[in-house]
Image (cartoon, rainbow, N blue to C red; front, top):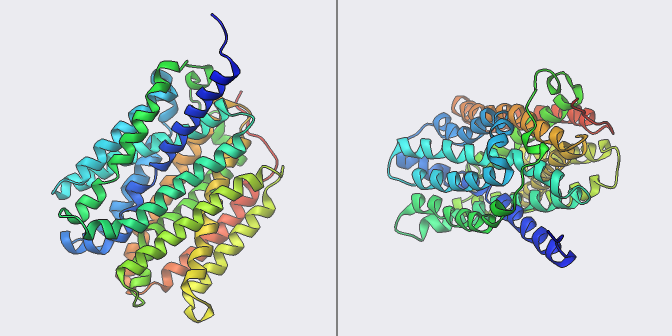
Length: 398
């Protein structure tokens, strides 16, 4: 059988890259749409802040519980098949969540969390497998596309809710459309896919990665970054609204944080790719995050737009760096698949505590100061684990 021509090969690679980017775009909007509507949903369904925090936490619990199982399931269906299934499950979860029932709101949220978990774990492994010479660039592109999806959802969800007859449920349902488009764009990959050893490699977490200090540092850095990110994603609009900002302005500030996060996740993996050791990048990003938190605690220090932009850039940059570290700290594609599963399982289970703790803290205290102080502590721990994860070492699975 003749080998494909360079033009045909480039065309296939381009279609694969486009599919990866559109799948990445869909891994955040279904979650990011909740933050700007938090107050509306709470009032419509008479939920406490703690229960509302659970709505944001359910996807994170799904991320954590499913991530370790993903490499095992992938052995049967392959990475392309799993990603197609993830998009289908995402569409189903969004549809269920939009039905007029509290039960389906939570069930649908759990299902879309499972779908997103598959994508979270498999995209780094696929990039390692198919773009081994350009994984810095591809990590930069797909992590920034995740930020684009989050920023767009944060910015337009409130106008969507106010401008359609189905209200906030209709605004949540809209995000099934880009997921359907991503699924259709991805379908050609199913006919071209060949299962490789990387996809079929068995998971042996306890024997190997669980004993690696480097793997734990990457996992904890990812978890602490995700904890802070999802706290901001879930509660920033309410934080600003409590200071007198109207809901639309607060929603756009969340969108601004996500937009600068896109810039951070675009720039940081490219920056990291120029260095064997990324510790200096960790120090810059965490320093920016701490400065932004202090600015949000003390409004007189500067305009809110500045601090929102800084915290968005630093969290987005840390996210892009965490994804990059999964790839660059792996010796090969099988290790990348397993490390991705471990990092995202541990990381997101840790992150899942964030929105619930924040909701409970606010219910008890009635102000956001304790939340900001908690986030400063999280940033300090992130600096410690990040410095360990950023050393020029490699995790090897034998």
